[in-house]
Length: 274
Image (tube, rainbow, N blue to C red; front, top):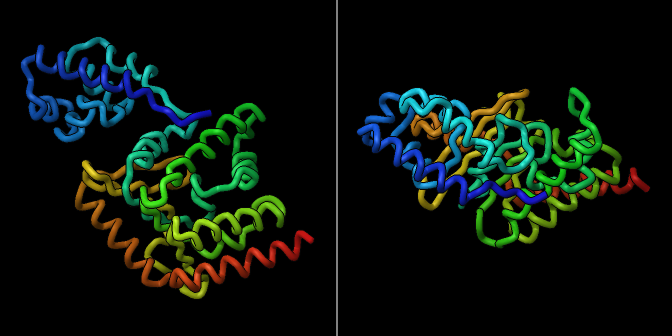
């Protein structure tokens, strides 16, 4: 299943928003004030660069008096099967030129092998049917397409040591997953750092964070917990997330030592599998 938003529909959505805003005699700034949305966000929606959320659509309908038009338009923009709270972050992921991420418990989605991802998606609650799991699996594997170009996006991945040690599936599954990370790291396609147990308490104990930079948009931060996630665009919050990430990175192993540790743990799983 391909990861595709519908760019044509998104452009039409933006054109419709611009037309109805202008018909109401509002500038982007005026609409932003009444809808309690940033002017930049409205500009990106009108240009077809950003997908509006359900809350965005409802605010626009209310301010413009469009009787639910923009909310009803949303299904035409549907893209992949992902958790609702991750949909916006996924769109940003596809546009990013630089991604720096920290994973506290699992290998990040676009770095997962098929066997590892299947185990992860089979373990959730409530249980998923095989059909639903396979749809989600297709979406997750398709995310890896962002790694097809060697130099874009640049990816830095910091893994808690528990990501390496927690046996997801069989030892063979874990060996294959860690070898996949090694191949990406040794080929210099991604930069890997492991935050070791010996670091103790660190700045990112609270959970997963992804920092994303773009060629034509301000940077954003995405943070996630159980059944929830949030994209932050407020510059002060994004800078704070960047600083926290840098602080934790200072406690992580170097790239060379991280690759050596991943190789060692992969060998342990390989021996166990035999």
